[in-house]
Figure 1: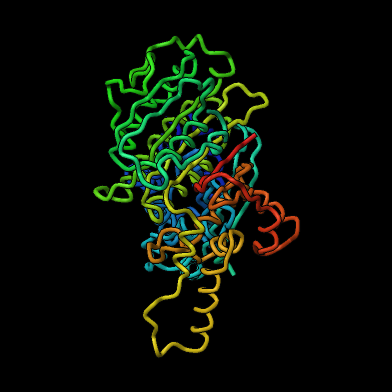
Figure 2: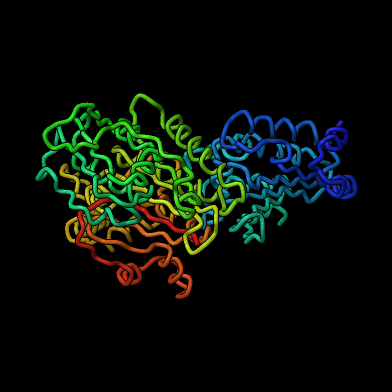
Length: 174
Length: 333
């Protein structure tokens, strides 16, 4: 089912598929699924559905959600992030990684990470908490479930050319 | 009426009292762009009361008149609750009307055609939820960005900056704000993208000053450290200048409106740092001073400082003689 969906999507390269099959990694570009308005409920819920359908729960230990060139505004990001995290939590493989690539850099990477998980029902139940409190909750979840979260900010300053990349890591492997 | 020139306009058109009726004479205007018009309209909005009657004398030359038409000047006046009149009065000239004639776009010079411009009014509405208001503005900004097929700038990053400004208007100001955006399709010496955001509210300094003013109802049980902190605050409210108040606003966690759980008091810092990441040159003009905020980030990075210091902010402040307005101006080359 998963492979069929990917093969019918012309934007998903064969290289991506090989990566999925050989290294237990799933790479999803929201834009490839026509889900650009990730500042609205419906596209975020659909992206969560995509993850639900495509992830072969027990055999994956790495999920990359590429949100580049999408309108990301944090109000509903928890819908698909929670889905991805719960899939990783249920995986049988150790050393799980969730990578989130965004094309927004708010300067303070900790702040951006806190915004992404602010409304998460899985890792953060206190949505009114400070960024530090949210990150502590995310960190606790990651440590309990052996998950590392990488948040990459890749800003393409001019056209579709080179990007500046910054990375923030919440390391639950230690 | 281009660029930042309308900042020099005398705003005191009614000696401090809002006008009910006024006349806008644009007959000698030779050039118009979105940035200049937005500043002009913001200054106008500061000086008039809602539902004022306005008559307009259009520019004598066709090109600026056409430009005003393209920028939907008439619709903007209505959005700002200004009732444009159809009839002439004693002060109107022959050409004036609130109706615009049509001039073919091809008549515009090449450099004018290359620039895509848009003005948006942000009018806080108590009948609409914050989310709905933000969503409405976001849709309009997205529509404008879609015209940039070559993706000359980082759309998502710029959107996050503009939305933060809109949120500040809705959360803090409560008064109309005007956003003008301009992007150049043909790359030349002009900025790839520029914007101006004029908020007609009381501004950062005044808002921070009011927030820090001591609470009149003193609590007898306050501890020594609380009293000391309170006296520091009231001293800042009373004696603080522009650099001191901006310094306060740039500290993480400091906000004049706590408890909305949305931006954790990081609003201004987020705007500044996101602008720097996007390669913007961003300045803010508030009270009587203008400061280039992205230069501040640069200098902080060069000085390897962990936070923005008073002296750093002071170095970059430039006092101006024009009337106060809160204005963010960003350019991306």
